Image (cartoon, rainbow, N blue to C red; front, side):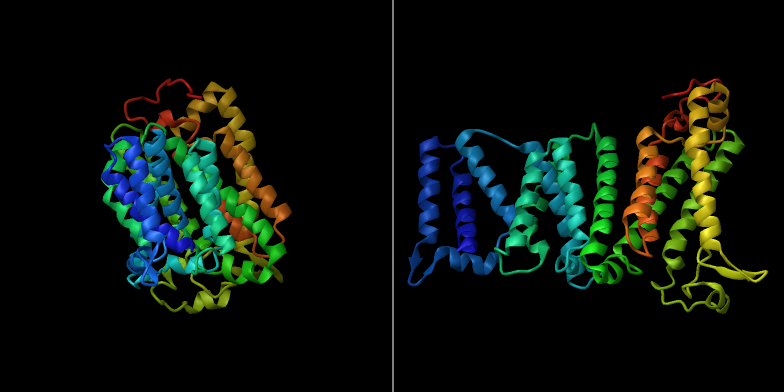
Length: 422
């Protein structure tokens, strides 16, 4: 019954669109009559039934937006800004989803909808962002879609079908140009920062809960090799590399050599981290592991961070020594020695600015500490280090892209005696 009502609502809204310039009474009559006629059986089947054979089941998101449109027409309330954000999100999802579902890519995001252990935290992050930013329509449609999925109101058991359908995708994509023109980009930087923080938080929450609820799903679906967690970590590091390279190209003629060397080195570090995360594309291109790495790499993969040796009868792990102890020590010095000195000592601040060191904001510091505390204190798994890399790479990207001292990357400002920008 629900799918037939949804199709009838679609047809009634179509009539309402045609009557949108008419008097309210005429619009109400036209909408109500159309809705009733579409549900009325004609020869055993209703008009809605025949139309649904062409459109398929409409998603709860579509139904919610149709009801919002009806409400707006009857009571004069508009949600243009919220609608534009939803149109862009649905358009992006559809452009990614449908071609990959047809086998045009090695990735198949649609398959993640059957067991949405990845899709769920992403939607949770988006829901929290919507509530935080006051995008209540976005938060509402997400809540309705997830509730509908839990209640299985559609025949499908794929979460994507509760979020997107062909009718909604066509409508959103056809309006994408208008959505882009009405979208407010004044706070884009804030949205990016807040969105990434919510993503990190949602996945950390999932990583805490999942080993308790179902350890096998955590080990063999959530945190496996070549999973979303691993690829996202590499993408975040590559994004940080791109930011650094962009700054290098833009500032190469106005900054001293040491500044540019450090900036280039930072880009190289990000590239190295991303390459190590995906074993330098070994599984993508089906490259066999060289004999050296078969012998000394603990996972039998091409990569330096999992190398292990016997030195003087002792087992030496590069991962624990360099990327464990060394990284933690460096982070402590960075957060609790360099950062306080930068903010209190003008000379130290000027010296670090000359070295192109992106200093952390307060929320970066808190973010690093929360990641360490949650991963080490709350995640009961031997593979919790993957979550340190995932969430840590998000904070690292934010640290690089939105530092406490953004003035050092301003091409119109000089570093000589430049006041510290808080």
